[in-house]
Image (tube, rainbow, N blue to C red; front, side, top):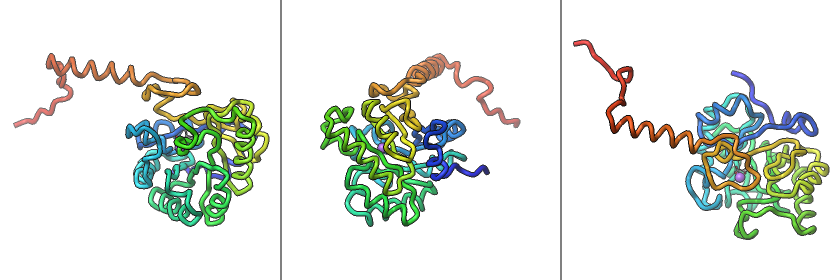
Length: 267
Ligand code: KIV
Ligand code: NA
């Protein structure tokens, strides 16, 4: 078995070859994307793109652990990071450690990610000192959608742009090994990339980030309601529709199952 990429190896990529990241929530998808990815995120986006929830706010720690286990089984070399879901880490550093250690012990993943407002620095330092690599997430923070007023690009006001840069600097100083920058102007993303000495992983950010991430069902064209920053690299909806239509036709006219699908026992 090949050794997995480590959190310090991701940090060492600052300013170097872009870090390739995608999300996964199940074993077969993890197996397909693993050879192409440095980092696989088990995102709490699973709530929306797999479970049909209206936001990520309803995702639980148990859901993240179940999907994290599946992704660990399917992948071999990528660094696997599991999102801590809403409510499992914001209250106190101790709560965050209880949640993060459960995730790591029960899935075998190597790191967690938290959405990092200004409150987060103490929590990041607390986790890292105790052996848990932390990826931070600044800019558009989907778990705060009820405060921010929905899923909208952030930082049009200078004060908010400055706060996003400050959040990333604090996350870096507190010991995060990388930081996701979501839903900001390319100018703000570039400021963040300049300001911190850890890799910035962009999503709706800038091609000059130190890496990129997308939600895999979004970029595959499986989930149809996607933000502007998603490029559809595939059209899985159409492919599934075509295959299922063919199946339904073949069942209807009894051309499926075919001879090669049948068990024939000698008597
Ligand atoms: O939950 C998720 O998939 C994420 C990525 C979009 C960064 O947080
Ligand atoms: Na997330």
